[in-house]
Amino acid sequence: MAAKTREDVIREAQENNVKFIRLWFTDILGTLKSFALTVDELEDALDGGMGFDGSSITGYQDIEESDMIAMPDPSTFQIIPWSPQDMPTARMICDVRTPEGDPYVGDPRHVLRGALERATEMGFDKFYCGPELEFFYFKDSKGTEPLDYGGYFDLTTLDAATTLRRETVMALQDLGIKVEYSHHEVGISQHEIDLRYDDAMTMADKVMTYKTVVKEIATRHGVYATFMPKPLKDQNGSGMHTHQSLFTNGKNSFFDANDEHYLSDEARAFIAGQLRHARELSIIFAQHVNSYKRLVPGYEAPVYIAWSRRNRSALVRVPLYHPGEEKATRMELRCPDPAANIYLCFAALLHAGLEGIEKGYELPEPMERNLYNLSGEEREKMGIESLPADLGEAIKAAEGSELLHKALGEHVYSRLLELKREEFEDYRVQVTPYELQKYLPVL
Image 1 (cartoon, rainbow, N blue to C red):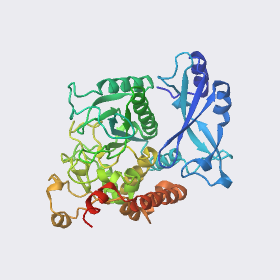
Image 2: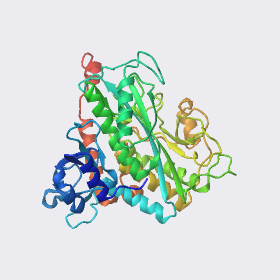
Image 3: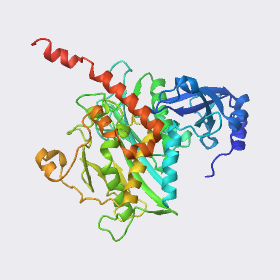
Image 4: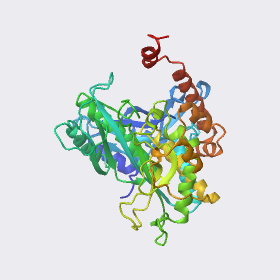
């Protein structure tokens, strides 16, 4: 399907009697930002963008150089399905530019575009991603009272969120986003709606839309949806398993019919790149202090840096659903969580994989044993490292990372580290209810 042009947008807005257009963009942490304009301003916005104050956006510019331009991408124009039918609102996702019209180095979309350009220079014209975002429904945002007590793939009256999921899927389809399937996840009140894979930039835009739709439909039903990685202590956290593949001229560059695992040399080196750089990339795919409450053994979240065909305790899995089928050959990175900035996440993962290809990294043998059952000594003998145990360790791993600096650029790299140091320090000095309950009565 051809991408929408400026003229398509203007025509669609007129035909559908659109009254307002919301312009979306993200800050460095991946929080969606938005402002609205009336349809009368649409043509000016498409031609020259709309100005805003960048100093108020997390990780953007300092106050003395704060003028920014939000430049709408016409291909992302969609009418918001829950807006009033008599006065529809549409949305467009924006690239952020400087007043001179140059791409802004702090714009996460620009960072991803840079990674995709590197892939193109290396001969790969498509980086396909299929993230699986899990989330929880709670009664409200003030606590963690669940909506249901269903389990994985349950179809019972306990799964009270079936209607919510159905409406969410319908809204996504109205927005032109293809859904593969939806189901109840392992945790109580935990759910997953899987989108059909797409090229990285399109998929990153879809993920921002998906998260908004999930939350919006929940709010309309008087409940709360959260992508917090680990809201419940004794339940699995929410992950964002990310399927990835590189294509060239319509052919899957990861596929080799003659390899025992159907993996090409490029696929092996790509996976090796993500494994080798996993610790320093943790600050991207697990960016919050809460992310590391999910990344603990025993709750299906992988912490050990290895790959496998069947073993879901490994960081990378090469799915076996359709063995030997070219289009289905891909890698699945299981450590990201859905609170990550999706643009930076895809960019960092792509750079790590391309680094592996460029430098000829060797992929170790797959680990088919359950890594949780191995002792620390056994893992050490096998050379299996772990992801950082907390955000503080992730910050240390990211400091001095040449790959991360290259992937993000100086501005985003330094601002992100600054923000994460502040977050971890704020967390580190908290006195938690756990400490008061455990120590106050006895010390």
